[in-house]
Length: 73
Image (cartoon, rainbow, N blue to C red):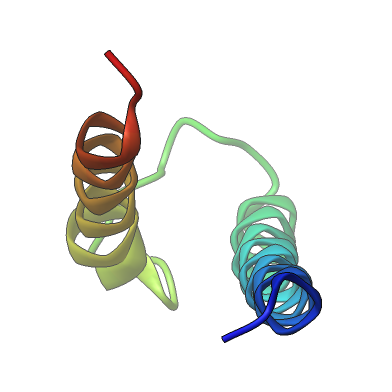
């Protein structure tokens, strides 16, 4: 794989991740605003609440390990 292909692959991946984060953030914000206050916030009451519990920690952990694996010592 050439450097050009790696760059395109990286930018495509980052774009997809950014779109997913934006979408889930928008849904979370919309559901909080629909309730009127953030005091009644629970993960089970929110649509896409599973994302906070499962998706984001998995992405964060995999990003951390990827960074550690690729780090130049």
